[in-house]
Amino acid sequence: MADTGRLGGKVFKSKVMNEDRIWGLASLGFGGYLWSKFTCLSLMMGPLIPSVAVAGSLVYGMARFSDKNQISSIESLPNGELKITYCSAPLKSETITCHVNDTFSVCALGNDDLGADDVESNLLAIKKHSNSSGQQAEPIFLRVPADAFRDKQMMEWIFAKKDGHETTNDDFTDLLRENFEARVKRGGLPLLTAFQARTTGLAQFARENDVESHLENDSSEVDNNIRRLQELYGAKHLEELQPHEFYALYKQHSTTIGK
Image (tube, rainbow, N blue to C red; front, side, top):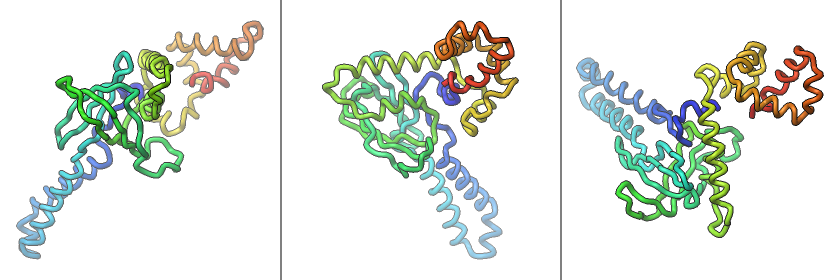
């Protein structure tokens, strides 16, 4: 839910200022600062060392901005198609179209046993795809960056190795897309709530004012949650509860039934 509001209808979207670009921007800024003090530095230590420092900072900064073969966004299209935009060269992007059955993750480019989300990138293999001109192209390998917003259910299916002889792949893809579109229609979390959800895992959701706001402003979700409570406890049991008892029960299960 926290990522849905930042994806803009896509299933994957890399962050504009990731760690590499922040280091690159810092290096470029440091090189600019050295250039502004070039005269003073040259008088103290000669022109060679400052020149090398300025050139090295600029080259390192530009190298950090080079995201070649790195995916910047993935959009889910009807019939299991994916539209993938990736950086083919520094400051240059290309868009390809492929089917989700032709994609799988080769390996994780990091420590696979850390147990945390979004700490490693993946190498994504695309067996068949069409370029921007509609022509079929050779298989391609692209890097999926870790520092990005993503719909985890859709991305897990994109990373999975699909059996070409399996007859239910398309049906499962349609189901995932239907659930994804439902999440997009519900919208994401506000900025502050999204930050709180990422840092606490919704542990602070069931505070009294949060539950009251949830009951008042999200009628469709509330109806679904009450329906789930009826499945758990029975409609007759809920009708017999006093208002404060029902409120406490809803508050107790708000985080669980909201997932």
